[in-house]
Structures are given as structure tokens and as C-alpha cells.
Length: 603
Ligand SMILES: OC[C@H]1O[C@H](O[C@H]2O[C@H](CO)[C@@H](O)[C@H](O)[C@H]2O)[C@H](O)[C@@H](O)[C@@H]1O
Image (cartoon, helix red, strand yellow):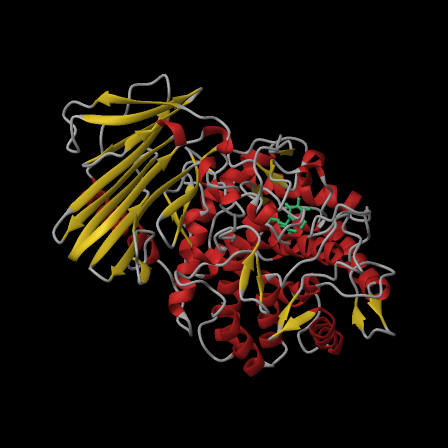
């Protein structure tokens, strides 16, 4: 069976979890109640029998979809030879519940509607008991469908419910509807031992949900080109933020492949300090403050304890154990196996992470977020620990599963961590052993210039002794490791373009041939690196080139403004987890940078 293109999906979210809905109305991915809960619809990584919820119009000749303004209320319009109908989808926000509501309205003529409900708990593995239950007082009708297995319960309410097709182990309904007809459906998750939650008023929830998202988006501060794209990317970052805990997931999915048919399939439904710190910077640059305080609180809880125990990532709630395992019962997206849950990168040493965290907290301090005694004490300890350990080899920003190296990017970010620590003392009046930090910072700087630069290649390199580049080196400009007019930076940017460029100015993050990443297969251009390239070009004064690349990158988004981790310009296909925070924060950051360097809004 061929997989639905990743770009065919739109995302819904409620600040706790997210759903992917295909262009033709199939909810193929949904984990409830939280991003990292087991999926109850997992057709994304298999087939319809792994769980999905389809509400579509047959024989459509045209399908258009859009979000309702600056929200995640999705409107999909189907035109057929005989009529026109619209399906609205949303996950209501800010009520502590876990619901997905859908409404079908026939606008013209007659259409044939197809409705199919296939629940499989446990990532497509567990077939539940499904029964009709009385639902007294419900505005939908006297009965509802309830699916139960183990700890999970899903209730489907509707003004028209599908019937059991026991042989196919699904519920299904195909019917003709005429102009003026409306079908409302509401799906609600709960713990199986608790009473069934009360019904939601569907119409009201679409409006309220749209209003809540739009109200949040109104806080955005960006005045430059592609404003809509920046706003949508900001919304995606908010969608990936868990409202209750402040944890920020790297993406809404697991195991959408970087290499179709290959093994580069990872679970991103966790909070990487790196990705979250960059998310925080993108939100701060765009005027948002509340999420920053919430994330810092999350960070302090997650990393509490001995600084030596710092992990590079945590669960949404700050838990430390994220054991990686493989789901053998799922065939994988486009046959890409294994499907993984959990992530073994959790136990890796990645020395860049503290740099990203300290840079984000530095920007937050500049924006006026007051330090608490605890927040600064934790940073002090982490910096003191870095002074002891910055020389250790690591797995780097790309989490290679090959040998540990002395990655130049990791060194640069260790420099950045100490540099921001020194600033916190000198500019913001915090206390700390600033002489030691300054001395170590300068030592790292001198070492990178000596061992990280290859005169023959005319570029900084991926790790000491390497003769190839890495797109992460573009961050040298962002963190101010050298002044932007230093020739070595411009030369590195040009070398990255030459050696990692694929087509249309898009670049790989590294060469899989030159980098021992411990994996088989190849990759496609990595979108956050492409945005870093646009940013770097703007910073070295090549603003026109930056703008042209940025325009090209914005055009890789799908029809509802979403991006996966990677994009193949040859085939126009998206790859990797979706939607991914990295790609969206890259867009926001590059937009601000280009605007600032072309005389627009300062970042
Ligand atoms: O491709 C190899 C690695 O891929 C994942 O890491 C990537 O995603 C992370 C989350 O967005 C990001 O922080 C990291 O920089 C990326 O390389 C995966 O989680 C790793 O286990 C895997 O080795």
C-alpha cells in the first residue's frame, strides 16, 4: 500500500496532543491524551487497519483546505459533479479534555459521504471492545459508540453514527446528503475506569477554538515579508508546546522517515533542550513572553539535581527515562522500518546543548524575564560543570550513533554558553566566577581557531581533524563566535553551499558519506539548516541571495503552511517527522534576521 504524502497532512492540536488529518479527511495519527501517549489512530505508519477516522466526500473533483484564520480549525471543501460540501475539524483547546470534533455541511446539491471509524489502541495493535451505550441528554442522539481496551476509552457521539462491520473490524457509514444537511461528530478520550465525559457542543467549540488560537497569534510581533508564513510557524511552535507542563516537543510524530524505506526513523515526541531553547528564542524574537517563563520553569524542574546528570532531552513532563523500542507490528511509513518509540539519544553526551540553553536564557534576560534565585543557581552549576568537561568528545548536534568526536559546533556552543554566562554577570549583575568562565571561554575560542579551521579546505570543519564541513557551523554567525565580516565565516558559508548543496540552494546537514553517523541510507536537505544558510547569507551581507533562498524555502511549505524536517527538491516530497519545530523556528529566525539586515524590524 502506498503511503499518503506527508505534505497531504494538516495538523490539529489542543496544547496536549496533535492529530494529522489527510487531504481527503482521514485522521491517520492521534495519540491521546498527550503527544507521547500511545496512538489510537496509527494508519500513518501502516494501513487503515492500524486505526483511522475517515470523514470524506466521495468522487471529489476538487479538494481545497485552509485553516480558519490564525487557528488550527481546519476547513476542507469538497466539490463533486453533483454538489459542494465542507468538513470542519478541530481539537478544542484550554478545557483540560481530549476531544476531536468534526462537522460536515452540505453547501450545494447532493454529495455521497463516507464515514469510517477504526480504533486501534496501542499504536495500531489493540482492537478494543466497541459497544453502543445509552447517552441520555446528549444533543447528538440517544446513543453513542464506546471503544474500550485496557486504560483507554474513546466515545464517538454523532448526529449520525456509523454501523458495525464486524468482519472488517470497523464502523462504517456511506450515505447521500443534500444541501442544508449537517452531521456533527465528537470523539472524546477518557480513562476507561472513569465515567464517560459529558458531550461537547460542536458548533460552539469550533468558534471558541478558532478564537483562542487567533487571540494567541495576535501577540506576534513581526513586520517583514512572508508575515503569514511567520505567523503560521509561530502557531506551530505553540501547538507543539504542552500547555500544562511547558514542555515543547520536537515534532508531533514518530518514525516519519528521513530516508524512505530506510532505518532513519525516530521518535520526536519529546522535549530536546536544544530544540526547545531555539523555539523559545524564536518566540521571544516575535514578542511572546508567557511561554518562555513556562519553559524555564519546566527546564528547572526537568534538570533539577546534580548538573552532572543533565540530559539532552526529557519527556514532556520532565521524566528522564525514554527507552527506545521498536514496534514490529507496524509496517512503517512507505515501508520504513523500524518504527521506533522512545529515543536512545537520551543518554548521549551532546556538548552543544548547554550553549543553546544559555543563549535562550540570555535573550530572555535581555527581554526582562527576571532571574529567580533558583534559576540562576542552576545555570551557575551547569557552567561550572562545563568548565570541567568541555573537552570531552561527544555525539554532536546531529546525535550521531557512530564514534564520539571533538565536534567544532559543540565547542562553539560551549564557548557560547560561557560567553552568555559572563554576560549574565557583567551585564545583568548576577554573581559567578566570571574570571574562570572568561578564561575558559577564551581558551575554547583559541582552540577552535587553531584546530577547527582547515587552511587547505579554506573552511571550518565538522570535527577536529576532519576535512569536510557540517551545516551546523552556520550557527557560528548566529552566536557571534567571530565578527560577521571575518573572511573565515564567509569562506565557510561558501564551502557549505558547495559541498552540501543539493539543488535550488537547499543543503544537507552533513554528508552521510563523510560522517560516520552509524546508520545506513541517505538524507534530504535539512530544512532548519537551509534557513540557517539564509540567515548566514543575510549576516555576511548577501541579503539578495538570502531573500531568494528564503522565498524558495517558504515555497516548500504545504498548502496549510506546514513543514516536515526535510524536503527533497528533486521530487518535491517532504521527509522526516511532521510538523517539526526545528523547521518552523528556522523560518521565523531567518525572517527576523533578513528583515533586520534589510533595514526592517530588528530581531
Ligand atoms: O538522524 C539521527 C538522529 O535524528 C534524531 O535527531 C534529530 O532530531 C532531534 C530533534 O529534532 C534534533 O535535536 C537533532 O539535532 C537531530 O539530529 C534522533 O532523535 C536521534 O536519535 C538520531 O540519532
